[in-house]
Length: 104
Image 1 (cartoon, rainbow, N blue to C red):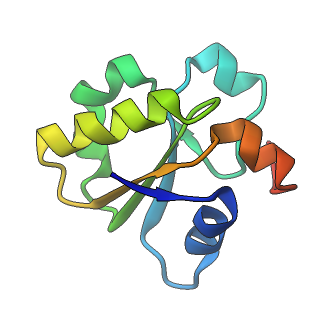
Image 2: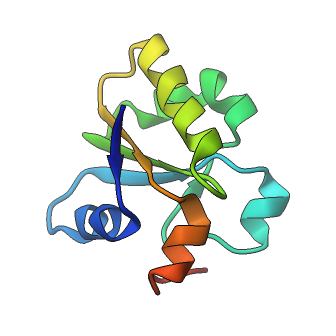
């Protein structure tokens, strides 16, 4: 699976004209406690049913707390044949925060 550092993912998401999306696969409660700016919440257990929501994006960046669940999420999307590039963000939200990137 492809991986990006939080900074690389942030740069991709900020690129003018991008069709990338940041998907946080943590639970709604975890997401509400704080998340990477601009992320949408699709909990890992809902991903198979909601994967079609991601088909309009060229790049999908998956994030969780530490990078473990988001790695599983990239594998789930690959097995479903979602037609976009899917990457895992190394270190998850914790690494995003430590990198000083914007949070909500």
